[in-house]
Length: 198
Image 1: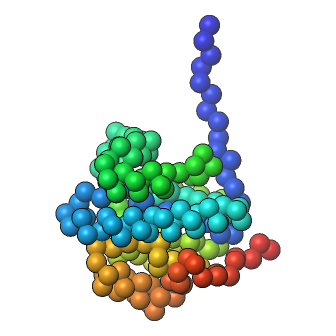
Image 2: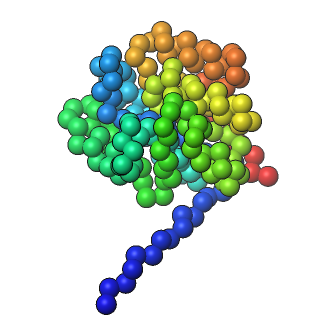
Image 3: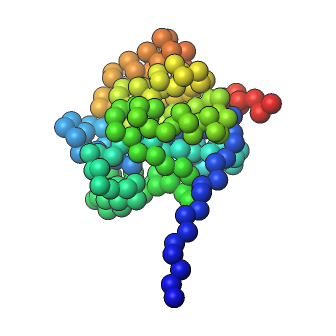
């Protein structure tokens, strides 16, 4: 007699800092995406290094990924489809594929906060600071970062861990985040003060 599958609740880690990866598992097939792909590939390498460094400090990672209108699918379907793409698009997905310890949620709009359980999850994690990376700088990353600031989080958007369709759009978005929303946009290679664990 076969046993029924048992649902095992996910253990939610507690951490004052959380890495939020926005739309990094991405087919990059929208109009004008061609100019974004190579910059995204360069950013993916930086993101992977930063994620590994943060993992060494026990900073958890949350993937907030677009569902690309596939309401019948799961994240695993999106990951498999993107990883199977040829060239740089597939390489990005394979480089940034989540590990077994990472948390994942799907979002229907630009912001990782809009119509998602992210705020509830971050509250359970007791997060105070978000490190936000991903694509594109001037769209989903910027909107997610502004929502994070309005929700009371300290925010760091490492400039070398995001990508946009052209340098001017990226520069404008980062300047706006720094000046209007007081986000740090220093590169991932520079030291950044850790959130207090008290």
